[in-house]
Image (tube, rainbow, N blue to C red; front, top):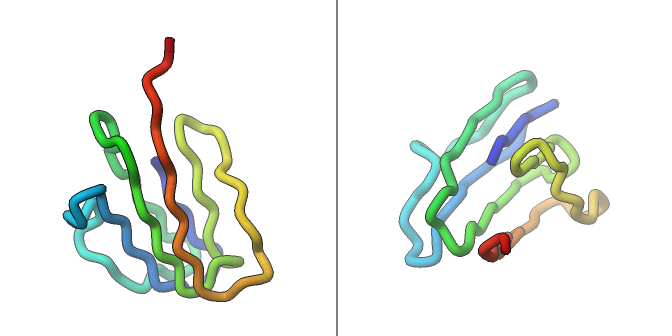
Length: 82
């Protein structure tokens, strides 16, 4: 999963047992990006403080979410590809 910021936003990412996947959770600034290995993880919870300033992608595919909310908790469920 890749997190890219176009402006300031608080960002954290946790796994299903609340372990931090992003070290550290922080305020990302414009042009900051973070790649997180989510292989083997069934679920990721991403908390965004200014969601319109952040783009999320998984395997190059954008994750779509409502841009008109400032703070968001986005839960991404992964399933096994068959």
